Length: 377
Image 1 (cartoon, rainbow, N blue to C red):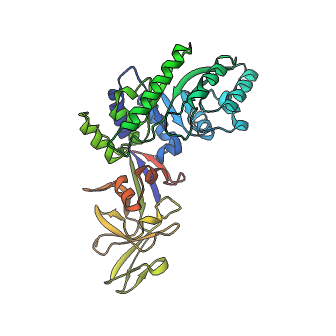
Image 2 (cartoon, rainbow, N blue to C red):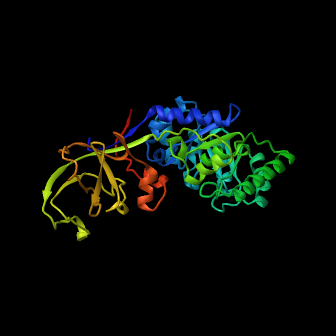
Image 3 (tube, rainbow, N blue to C red):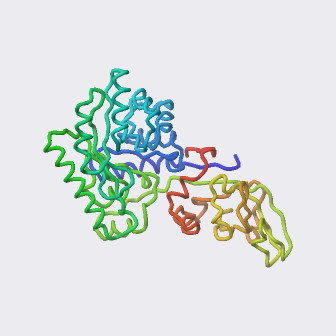
């Protein structure tokens, strides 16, 4: 293999165990495996998560759900993203649990369920302040009534999502959202609606606030051993909570495809953005922005060769990039190179790569191309 991703199976299990202990036995755990499990490999992670005790698999699209079903995953699958009206049939056929935010979807699901003689368990997503996907509070009683009066539907869940719980140490807004959610859920109960599963917690919420755990906690980024943000870590300590020993799951590797010595004053790569200041050994890596190695890393990132850092030289290309191994005399053709992860005593973290790129760790891992092999270790 020239480019591949190694997945630490025990790290997944360890991270999941720690969250199970954090939320307690009365709270179900949802492993968020959408977007190819944040770049880690959806089918591989789904199996590990289920083996590790995850009660739900949470995905974004109907296509992801079908892949899970066809991959042998028969448990509860929560479809969190929007499913088009003409694509709702698989929700019924594959016994999925959709998150719904509009009347049209409920009406269509009820029609489809009637044809199959089934009842679809729906989760209504309520708007509490994110203003992204959700039902306004004023519309919720009407939609809950529609579900109750529909022979093909069953109100299984009520959920929401936080707007500002990760990137701040001031959680006033998040607290207001959970208070709003609790009030709305209470109002529904008083109106006679049974809501078996309430869920709001993402990784950060599960780490910080017990009151957000409710009946189901959806664990995303931290399932993969990454803290949602440095602010979440600081907040955890400030609140007197133990910081989980999260273990990064992913190591991204490639191999040296060429090494050549170039004279002082040579330009490296497109646009002549780098010029050598000494005679240099330049190695070519067969990985670029198509594979998910961001072009913004040009001239700023390092990789690991024989446990030592080698800087990126010049611009990252579509399928290649160049590194300087002048100070790594032992570097040879097809030597293993770590783009993300550990080698020897050195480590390049997703957070560090994100800082170099001006983005967040979520984007760094989730954009690793799905075609690259995921290898369990």
